[in-house]
Amino acid sequence: EKKAATTAEWAIAHRVGCTSKEMLKVLKDQFEKPHGVALLPHGAAAVRVHPAEDELRGGRICSGMPTPLLTNSNAWIHGSFALLSSRKTLPLPEEKEQKATLDKEWNRMLLEGPVADSMKGLLVYCTAMVLFQGMDVERYLAIFPIRGDRLQSILAKATFKVSLKESIFPVARGSKTTWVQGPTPTFYSKDLPTELQDCLVKDGMSLVSLPSEL
Image (cartoon, rainbow, N blue to C red):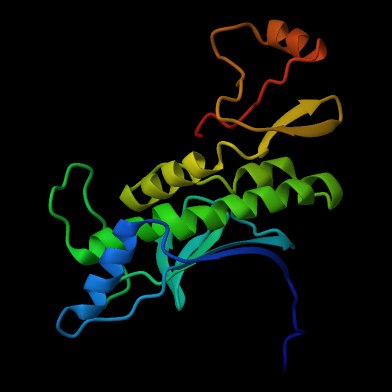
């Protein structure tokens, strides 16, 4: 018995191109080494809009096909990563590693460049989904990756860094949501009474509220 076909709506953002001279050099070095490979400086980010996925932060890293690696976001990431043959590990330089291999450097640059730019584009697009198509704010905020393992931490930091100057930070005013941009948005503080901060918002101050894990 055939199962009924299901359809889903996705929001997708792409970026192709080297984002620095260093990335271009690594790209050339990868190609010119013995048994070298030609890697495309491509990154893409996608989130399922309708129906929303059951798991709030179950997005995965893909390179051609999905891998077991989680993004710690509800966004699925695609890139021309240099994976190990098992596809269970994505080599990345450690925080203070001095001479990382080309594979490690390439993966880091791909995450911090085209992939992070794709995440930014996805966040910007989904602000309109919240306003006009009923995307839940909690689902929107789950697009922001949160720190975890080395891969997730690089992705989270890079996404936040490239997105700061975009109007992607939600400010709730009554039943409406508006958006503010950085580079220094004003966030709700744990050090001030909530009642006081709510009064500041009523007086017109734009205070951004993000989940504590961000």
